[in-house]
Length: 261
Image (cartoon, rainbow, N blue to C red; front, side):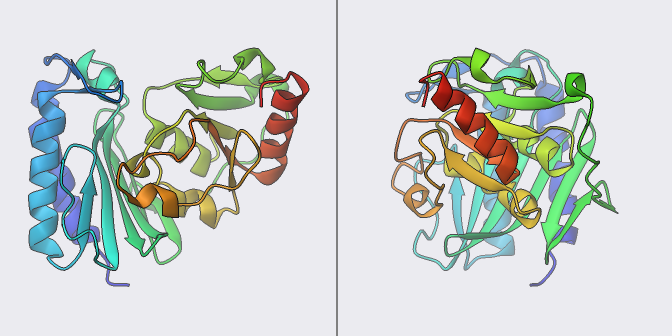
């Protein structure tokens, strides 16, 4: 695969110029799916989509903030979240950023994520994961129980979080950032409520390369195919757990034991 790093590096700098002056200074508006959007989301989407059209004119583009996808029948598709962590962005919190994933059919093959305030940039190409220009070496699993944690996003409507036994819980405001914490060994698993293609695809190459699995709350396996259109959302309204198979199995067992799943 041809490297996209030069293009992405330039795009990230332009992204900073668009978003950082608006950080914590814009109000959000509610969307029909219950999420929020700001002027920064829309500006970032327009700029990113335009740049991708110029860079890869024969690739499709699916963006959270665009009503109509570009070249939806193309073999290669960009799935982008122009500003993951909108609520954090609007309130002046630090964890938010750009996520871009490249699909070959329904297979996520590359990922590019950039979080300006926390100064972390992640790339995955040709089977190799990078963080800030250095190959990612996931930290070892924690043996001290008090240091084990699970990142959660919008799951309270679907599960009793007290069933997450043996782990601390954190929500940093960005599902993609949670997944990168998993990919870099800074959490044991992530649990996300029903979400969309662009909330997962940029990060899946990282987690899948580590052998992590994705399971819905009912135990069934996650499949990208149903998220390819027309709404790009989960086919079933239930949470998804991502992590090492033994950790995912343990969490599912806890939910089943409490009658949550």
